[in-house]
Amino acid sequence: MTSPDRSATSAPPDQLQHIAQTLTRMRLLIRKRTIGRMAIAKVSPGLDVSHLDVLEAMRIIVAEGGEVTVGAIAETMRIDPSRGSRMVTELVSRGILERGVSQADARRSIVNRTHLGDRLLQELREVKHALVAEVLAGWTDEQIATFAELFERFTAGFEASASKKPEG
Image 1 (spheres, one colour):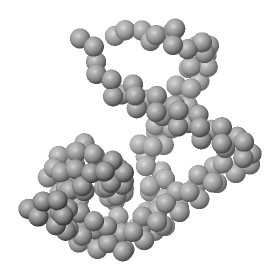
Image 2: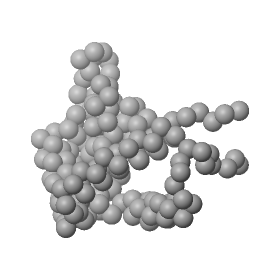
Image 3: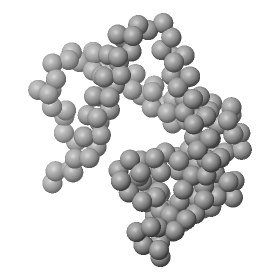
Image 4: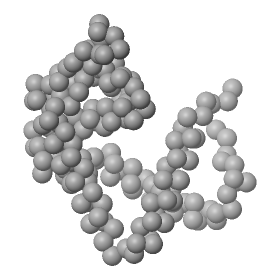
């Protein structure tokens, strides 16, 4: 394993350690799916947190200009296509999603949210926004704007590092 490139930052090691430890705490919260579980408990207690991943994968696919198919959902979620198919089928049976026919290729099946799915997603967003607002209570507008900009930059940096192919 190679050592990190210290020339990339002038941050003192103790500050880097503090960021790394805070990031670990955040990762543990994310792994517990805290926000998703809170939203589901309020909005639709019968859903599993992984169902939210399907809805988020669909949003990503559409944002990237793709067609929402079971295969695209599975690929975006990095899961086996059969598992993706089972999850979509569960959401179809609950009336959250519906299957349709591709306009580009009538042989392909696509997946769409129903009105219930749209409403559920909107309610989930509202719960998430309320939770974030609660966490940021007491912050100034300037602090929130700075945090939003830096958090985006930090996350984009992680995405860029993760997308690099390993040397060798």
